[in-house]
Amino acid sequence: MRIVLGVGGGIAAYKVASLLRLFTEAGHDVTVIPTEAATRFVGVATWEALSGHPVSSSVFDAVHTVNHVRLGHEADLIVVAPATADLLARAATGQANDLLTNTLLMASGPVLMAPAMHTEMWRHPATQANVETLRSRGVTVLEPASGRLTGADSGPGRLPEPEAIFEAALALAGAASVPGARPVPSSQPAPSTGPSASAARPLAGLTVTISAGGTREPLDPVRFLGNRSSGKQGVALAVAARDAGARVRLLAAHMEVPAPDGVELVSVETALELRKAALHAAADSDVVIMAAAVADFRPADVSGTKIKKRDDVADPVIALVRNPDILQELVEVRDAASRDQLIVGFAAETGDADGDVLEYAEAKLRRKACDLLVVNQVGKDMVFGEDTNSVIILSRSGTEPQEASGSKSDVAAAVLDRISAELSRVVPPA
Image 1 (cartoon, rainbow, N blue to C red):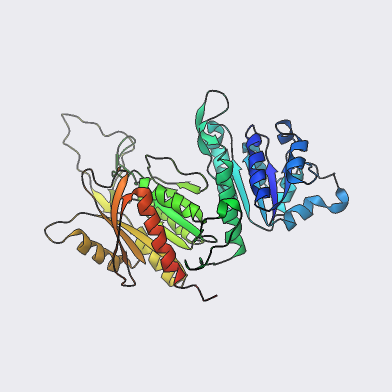
Image 2 (cartoon, rainbow, N blue to C red):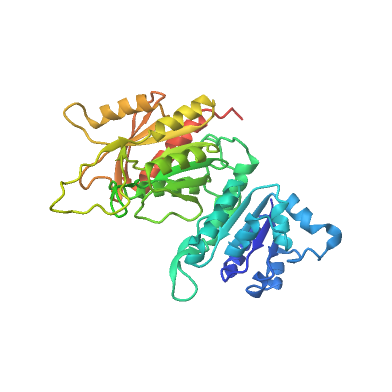
């Protein structure tokens, strides 16, 4: 595979030498295009020695080969790391003032950008707007890692580890090269993409959208209606799907754990925000896993000021309105479009005098009409916030319910295995 590796002018550029090594040792042909600022952190000689190709940041070098057009047009994949705030801004606004930005404008294949910058720069509205613009145009922009930054500061803004960028890049390239692909059956060997991809990658070539965490419905500026979801199970699913080779998009409501490296992160707060994000993300997803704990109701009225507790005023009565059924709507949209897509729901249930957990779950599966429903019984010290889980996986196809338990990573692996099995049913024989 022909890869263009763009390097932005940030201190994290030194890590990209390891990323370049991963690409070349996996047998890929890599051309490095640093910005002029990047060469102040890592010199041209290093990039040339590791890539085996001449390196330039200027459109005026090797003019006879028309590099500013040729490199982007011929590349099977473009990876930019670190993508600084400046570089994201220039890419989002279509500037072409050096060889790298020219190449990005000429890109005919997938583009992955791995940001790295100070936390305040990453969170600045201008940077977030630029990221949203790039993503809306089909560019994969990873979320930065959290941790120690330059100096004594820490927070989101670190460059993801080279191994995580490498895996995300290969997954993206696979998804682009096999449009609408389905994974090979488990009886066939998965295609190899190099030393780190020796394990089976049953979801290579697929885009998987996963929701995680608990939504929060505002009551006033300081209070909200929420739930006990920690997001641990959703994050475990994202890690499992990423490691299985998928391009993963994580729709994250409130979570007590950080999002993993190597996935696209979309942050939401309320059920309505999650609905909008899920419908948008599902449009290009092969698999949608709705693991988030979504509030069934929200306050009918949201106070613009903090509701005061006063002796001369009666206690407030909170009127609730029903939130939309996101899972059911996703199924309806898919079916209306005759889209080939697998949709997985999660159901946190408690039994009562009218029925047990499984009875309620089976009724929910019939009502929602999703392909798989992952069911767990919740309660005090059960599931929410815990590191372990126990689930039953129900299928609309009528196959026998499947039990899975253990750590949330173990449960995620079982769910992904079941998804792979469901998808492999539609793979034509080789």
